[in-house]
Structures are given as C-alpha cells and as structure tokens.
Length: 219
View 1 (spheres, rainbow, N blue to C red):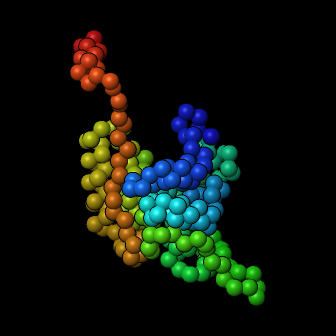
View 2: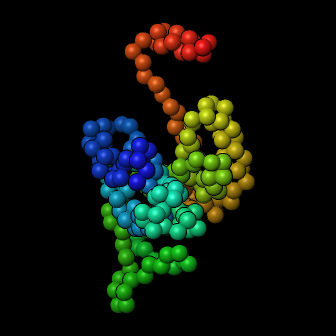
View 3: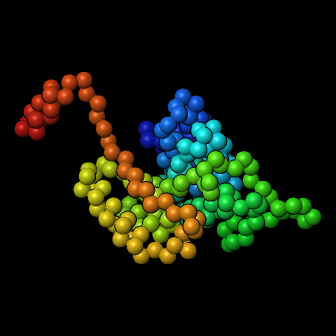
C-alpha cells in the first residue's frame, strides 16, 4: 500500500526463508499492523507461533498500529480505534500463548465458543515460554511512552542520529519507572529491550567516500 516504503506484505513467508537459512540470529517483525481490519489477533498469534517453531524459538514479535490514511483506507480501519485495538491485540495474543484455552470479552473483542462446544484453543504453541518477546514500532515520543506502559520493547527510528535515539531512550526509562506492572499487556512477562533502526551506508572505499563527503560539505 505504501509504495517505496512498505513492500513486505507477507512477512512470515519472508522470515520463514530467513529462519531456514540461519541458526543463531533473532527473527523479527518490524512490524505487524495490529488493528483488527488489518489482521485478526488470533491469526497473528497463530502465524507468529508457527514462525517461532520453524525458527526454533528465535522470534521477536513486533507490533504497529499502521496509522497512515493510505493503509487505513485500503482495509477499512477506523483511525480512532487503531491505538485501542493495538493494545487489545497485544493483550489478547499474550493470553492466547499463556493459557490453554481462549475466552475473551471486552468492548473491542468478544470470543466465546458456540453453545455446547468446548472453548477455543490456539495451536500451534510457540517454542519460547511463556511466549516470544513483544515489541512496538515507535515513530513518535508518545508511542515510546506507550511501549513502556505496555511492558514491551520499543523499536525506534534512528534517522535523527544518536542524540535523538538517546533522548528516546531516556524518555522510555522515565516512563518505565512510573508504570504499573499489573497493567502491562502481558503481566509478569515484561520486555524492556530497546531497539533502534540506524541507517547504514556501505561503501567500497571508506577514505575516498569520506573525502567526497568533505568536498560536498565545503561546497
């Protein structure tokens, strides 16, 4: 949907190929859009658990709200519900992975078995216990604070350089110090790993390219 920006429409397929060709690196989404119009949370939990099995317990599950108008228009997502559905999805996915059966009743999501039938059970179950670590894509300071409140690891964009990343880290630490652990999306299973996407340029000759950059700066 976001041409020249987001071309990974089926990340589990790509990450399965990565998992099959590696044995040590972590395998991670950055990130799955969690509002229900994009992905039902039960399906996210199932797909992620299967990827955790294929990778032998190397999955990091990254979440996002997919908040651009272009994305929302394609999938009929209500912009007012992106944040609450993101939080609800993270809470529900943790529940699916921690508990043997699924029963859920909230304003946003209701899951009950048909009359006379047993409760739903999500399969497969992930290798990592109680579940793979949860992360949240953060493109603004408020989302960094939200990640701290949720008890999930923030994934920040480092395009502003080390100073910006440092400021976001301090913001996360301050919010983390004030959170209520019982209000986290997966109580008792908090992930405080801070991740930053740092742009990288690969050159054939370091000294030559540094010289070119210096010339451009002088001009």
